Length: 497
Image 1 (cartoon, one colour):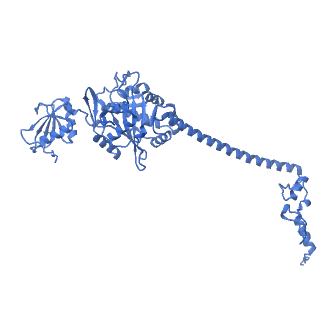
Image 2 (tube, rainbow, N blue to C red; image 1 turned 60 degrees about the horizontal axis):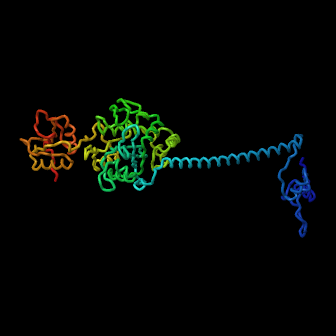
Image 3 (cartoon, helix red, strand yellow; image 1 turned 90 degrees about the vertical axis):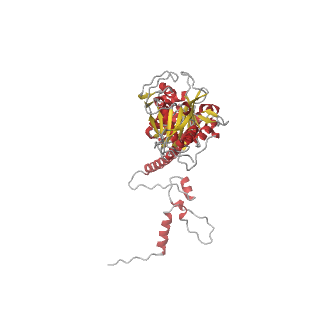
């Protein structure tokens, strides 16, 4: 049986429309106004119950802040409203706390940034060079340059030992390649002769006493490179750094026992060098290995200190620099120093190449000078930049004054003008050729450099190294000559055209 639906009458439709309007709050359901009527737009707030007259008036204006739904389970309506109010208040409090936390974080972040900036500025002021003199000679590396050079100078004078002279006493030209994590150190003896800004020859320590710019320029011209940074320190700075790092461990080839260097005795072999032994080690020069061994000791000590200083975290490294309180002065900012330390962290001493610039010591006018040519220095620098192995300490060039012994040159191959040619070449190197002539027969296939007295073995070796050819021979019982060394020209000699 189908129930017939009653038709919707006009009265029924109006009743449904009225109920819908009554159930809607605010301005969304205004009462219908007849055309032409001047009556104001009426809100339905008067048909809805409110807890106060103020809320009713706000609803009449079209604004309702919240609606409290009557509980369906018989719970007290007043209690439900209180819980609702607490929820609203709690959410509001959470939002306020979140905003407060963000604000505090921002404040502390800004304060931390400001504090770090202030720390860097303070450290820069402690480490900065006393004047901007060095800046005139320093040259920033090109953007595409693989490495850059740093000149390090140290004054080793202290009140516990005789003065070594005015100016700095130890110098090193350091090449740093951060990308490849490569470091090379070229030692420059303090008595190395270089050309100063006045065009005259001076010891390196004398040029250093004139000013930082003079020193940097002289070394740059001598080595044929541009120097990007400069670091200088003194005896107290070295002692403080050694103390801060707890000393370093080194393997010494010879014992250190030099009264002119200090009152500390250091045995040969593996030794821990603390703050009390550091200066004595660096100053000691009465070594059987001569200036080569002295430079090697200085180089290895400096490298060991640097590696140990960079082994800690960046923050620890910066705090360490700060605690030194200006013991080191440099143009490098604290931020850049931290970057360099971070880039080289983990490098070991075995991977750091080092060598003394080739040369020899000679006494001139009562002063012992280290004579080295700029061409030899440039050649050494070229090997360093190319990544080639530098001269090993065991096979380093023999440092003998070429004018300290006499040479006889004899033509043993029958090469026309050969004796005169080789004598001229030796004279250009500073050797003292006092006699020339021919051998009894022209049967020599190779050039020989002969000595009779063991005291001139190194002298003979230096001649071979200078000529770039020949073989050293102990001629005792086989050769007779009146000079200290005899050079016999062989057929392997190629005359200079």
